Image (tube, rainbow, N blue to C red; front, top):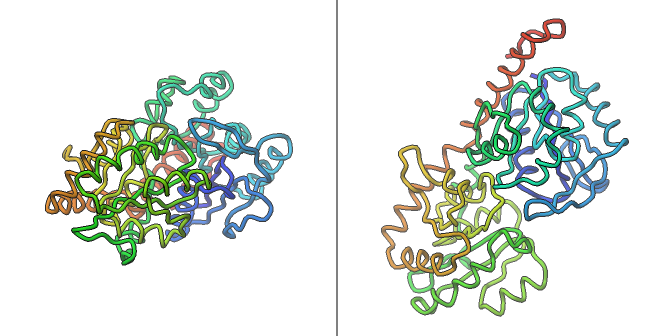
Length: 383
């Protein structure tokens, strides 16, 4: 198949949707498809050869984070040129309601089109405001994917548009299952390591909850080590240092996997705005015992098909609950190892070799549906 994928968020700033789009493109290329990705990016951003950039972006604050988006006449012209050059069998739009290149492509596209919705939130102000303009476009999509049940509920609640498929984000779990711990990060029975990783400048990542849990843990395990990795400001680093947290800093993808593999306990105390929880899959695949806030999206990810939890949960924002779960797992090594094993098995269900075929079949469904409505522009359904 000739597949066009549109990412609304700029590739010069890492984020879950951007990583998913790049990983999806590479998984599809490995499976023999021709793939082109269109996304915003600053001129000096290094991108793979299959990416065409849609120009600079501007920061927009949304859903507890900052998204970098591209729109306007120049962006619209670039979208149309990319569509014309690509002659795609199917176009896959990510977050097609976001005011960026995805929504432009949704209206410019003629042919089979799939949309994937990542956002999970109780109340989406942006969706409600944009509803008159984006709902008709959503209804014209040949297939609608949500990355989790909570993301599907967000779309249905805000726009009264049904989601036709729930397909999780894919993760290259092999990079995490084969990661080797680094000795300087690795814990011991006397000094267990408890870690957190992410953009700690964003309050929704729950770093405050993590810091507030530390004194209660150290009252029971005074030699416990707490580590933080990721991208964050000097102010956040200083707060971490004052709390006795070891600041690792920003890590390459390979080192991120080793960081998670080195932790006795990995914490994800996020406070909201999560539609899936790739970080949970990564940490579970790396063999860490995971403690997460009880967000619906996190429970969806870390509960197996039999309803068995593959992580421990605490109430959102409750540092005492997080501390109690950390102490419980540090105290009980067999329980910790059993939880880590269940997590690793659960993480395998999100690997690309499981997810990519489901997305391919969704593309074929979209092509067949489009052909039934517009037989004059139908091609032979690609293999």
